[in-house]
Image 1: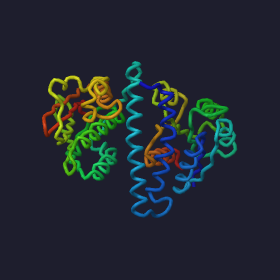
Image 2: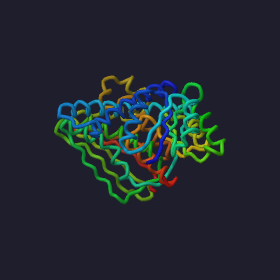
Image 3: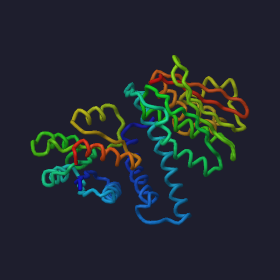
Image 4: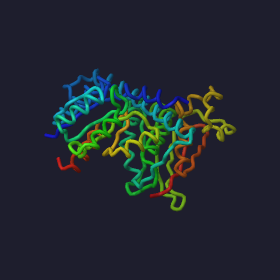
Amino acid sequence: MAKILLVDDETEFVEMVAFRLAKAGYEVTTAADGEAGLAQARALHPDLVLLDIWMPKKDGYQVIQELKGSAETAAIPVLFLTASTLPQTLEKIKAAGAADYILKPFDPPALMNKIKTILEQKHV
Amino acid sequence: MFDDQILHDLKNPLAGITGSVGLFLEGLLGPLDEDQKKQLENIELSAKKLTLFLKELSVVGCAENGQLTVGKTAFRAAELVPELDWIKRLAAKEEKSIALGIDEKLSLSADRELTALVLQDLLHNAVRQTERGGRAGLTVTDKKKDGLLFELVSNGSSSFPSEQLAHVFEKDFRTKHQELKMMTSPGAGFYFCKLAVEAQGGQIGIESRPGLTRLFFRLPAG
């Protein structure tokens, strides 16, 4: 069973996504800010991190930078969840080493497909 | 138009609404009776419309600031059909239907997301203009060196005055012509469509006479 860490500060959104992922058979852990997300990633070594950008304590860019900067966590793929369509945001996401991104609001099947693709590439 | 931060803040809670409603409609929270299903579908369809308007405003904001990026890829036009599913369901609720004529093999070279938004906008508008019991249509044809031609027709009794046809894609058309407001797409609507099509190297146009309005756009073939 693949382990997914969901890091986002929108509580109701997190509950919805976590429920959907759990129903699909994934083991889900959540964190409501960047710092907690980093701590969970280091402790759990998830197969995938779903990451928001604008969060308290540390934003998504800082989180991915620290994940990619450590040999222990560099290989964990990151899928950004963002409501911003600004080109500079999307370029920054790609440049940071994210596996992919999905724009909020999204169709749930689109999220599940992206997750499946990333995990297949990682051979989970 | 709105700045990106406001749009971002509007889209975030909308993601929670659409996602949670989806959990019910997909049966992940148990069976629903017909009334529950109907009301949840209404929430879902309203959220789809709002999502479309917000995404259009984001694109318009980027385009007006010279920041619109177009990611061209080759894909089949038929791949966009699932993204029109919510409009088909909306039409069915209003006792209207949609005739789709898209050859499976036709492919185009365009920005998939932008093209899907334009199609949703124009098809939604075609359905709005179609009389109850009537049929809106979308066809895609290969015009060889002129690319793919997307045509959307509605059979409503209203039509645009001929002297206004050259202006319907202008930004302030809906504000200036309140009497024609119901004939154009809500939100940034037609203005968005023009920006999105032209950013991809395409052209957009309209023909209208009583009983038939035809909106069309061309994009490079793939």
